[in-house]
Image 1: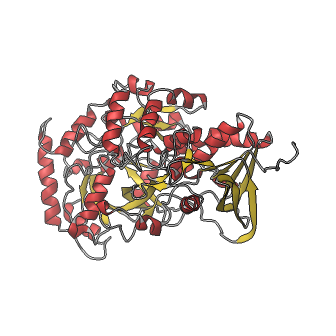
Image 2 (image 1 turned 120 degrees about the vertical axis):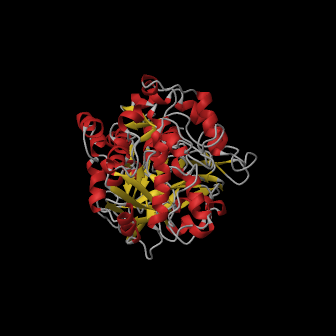
Image 3 (image 1 turned 90 degrees about the vertical axis):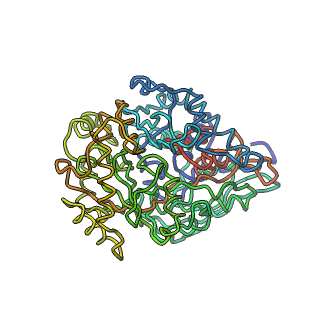
Length: 554
C-alpha cells in the first residue's frame, strides 16, 4: 500500500441484495472489483422481492414473438412506451427518465434477449399480452404481446446472479453483510465514502417472513463508491398514502401488500440526506385485482390476479366499470376510476363476476410460489396443467376453495347474496347485476359486437397464444353449462414505486444542482428503475425486473 493511503473495506459497497444489487455486484466482481453487499435481511432473502415475482420480462421483436406471428419493432414499442409514460416534466424530473426510457426500449429490442440467454435465462414459448391499454393508438398499453415469462419465474431470473455472488464470495471478491441496516451514507468533501448503520440480531426466519428489528451493535464500512439498490416503499402503507397523488383520488383505507415487509423505502430519505435528488415521488404502481392470501408469508400478504379479458368487472355498488377499465387493460386507469368516482371513495373493493369456464382458462396468479410448474421449470407439468388439463390450475383452485374473497353459486340472486355477505353492509342489488349481465350476454350471438369488452375478447382470440392458453371460448355468463357463477372480491394491492433517486445513464446519483454526487450510484426501484422514473406515469409490465437488470448493469 502506498504511504498515506487509507485502507478501505471494499472497492464498492452495494446497499440492497435484491436483483439490481446482485446484477451490479456481478458486473463489478467480474471485473475484479471487491464488493461489500449489505442488506438488513438474512441470507435466505437474497434476490429480494424479485424472487417472488412471476418472472415477466418485456422484450421487443423476440424469437418467441416471431414464432407466434407477432409483428413488433422498436418504433411500435417506443410509441407504446411514450404514450403510456406521458412524460410531462421534461425540463426537470423527467429529463433523465425519458433518456433512460429510450435506452431501455432500445435494449429490449436489441441486446437484452442475447444477454439474458448468456445468463441461462430462457422463456416459455407463449408470450403474454399484459396491459392491453386505454383503447387509443397513441395512449397507454401494449399494442402486441410482449410479456415473456422466464422458465423459473422470478426465482429463475434471480438464480444466476445469486450463484455468481456466492462464487465471488468464495473467490474473495464479495463479502456478504447480512442483518446490517444502513442508517447513513457517509459523504466527505462531496464524495460518498461509505455507510454507517445498525447490526440487527441474527434471525433465521424463512424467506419473506417479517424479521426481528432487535439491534445488537453498530457498523461502518468504507469504499470508493456506494451503490444504493434498496427497493421501494410498497410494504409501508403509511408512506404509500403520504405520496398518493391527487390524480388517483383518495388512497384506500385498507390495502393488501404485494411485497415483503422489508420493502420499506428507508434508503430514499437516507439518500436524500446524503445529497441525492428524489423525483417523481407521486408516481406509483398498484394493482386493483388483489386477493387476500389464504396462506400468507408476510404481513397483509396479497396476491394479484393476472386476468384474461372475459370476467365482468363491477364496482362496489354493482355497476359495470366503464371502458377502458377492463380486466388486463389499464391498471392505473381502473385504479383512478375506483378512487375518484365520488360515491365509490368510501369503498375499497370491486368485484369480478365470471364462470367456472372462465376461471379455468383465464385466471393466473402472480408470484413464483403460485406457479410451481413454471418455477420448477417443469415443462411437461406446464403442458399438462395449462394447455391440456381440465379444471383450474392447482393454486387457483386452492384460492377458490380457501380464499376469503371467493364465492360461488348457481344463480345471480344466490351469488349476489353471498357477495353481500363479504361486506359490512349489503351494497349490491341482484336485479341490477342481472340486468347488466343479460345485456352483455346478448352481445355474444354474433362474431361482432358493440360491447368493447366483447370486441376485446374476440380480438384476443385471434392471437394464437391467447386462444390456446389464456382466453376462454366466448360464451354467455348465464349459460348453465359454463357455471357455476363465481364472484371475486378485489382489493388494491400495493406494489411498485415509479419515482426515486434521479440518475444519469451511468446510474450516477444526481444532486439538487443536477450534477453527480461523486461516488454515489443508484439502481433498481429506488432509482425509479432508472433516471428517477423510467416508466413515467404507467408501466407496460415486464419492465420492473428488466429495469433492475438494466440499471444494475449500468
